[in-house]
Image (cartoon, rainbow, N blue to C red; front, side, top):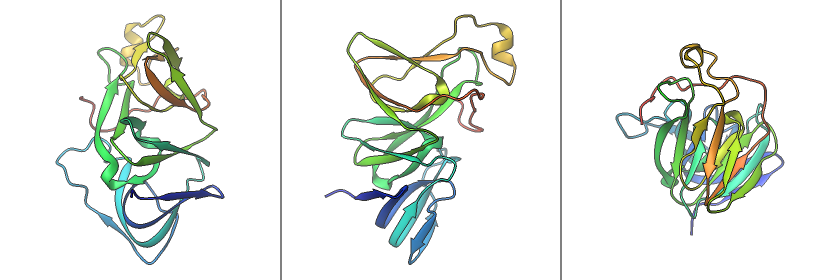
Length: 203
């Protein structure tokens, strides 16, 4: 039987064991919560996720992102690393950065792959589960992407100029195209700029 999680009152509660958690988590715990070193010379999601060993029970919640979504990972799931709240450590299957703007690191997305169990995502708004049929394409704003199954998305910008590649603001009107078959989880968009991970630009 896999590790269990209970979502109640805006918190994700987990028991004893090793967990991958977002920065600043858990919010509260019984017993002890020891931070362990994540093995690996270069982990692209190291800036977003910590490995924590819980001796009894812990509650995870992020005040900036109060909406929680439980995603089962029977099929491999790629999740936005910055939006991961908690997942079993054994479910981690790798991490990568997805370059969505050609010749630029401004639009790189840091993602964590989960190959089993589940992951709980924390978002600023409610999350929609969108089924993309084989042969169909779904377009999503980069800041709205939460997680997906299937092929990695491709970036699309109606007009990409030199300034879009070089300026820190990144390209305007950038969209991500998800090609089916796949499942995409998305939250509400906001008029902010796309954040870029500090490390791990290469894939």
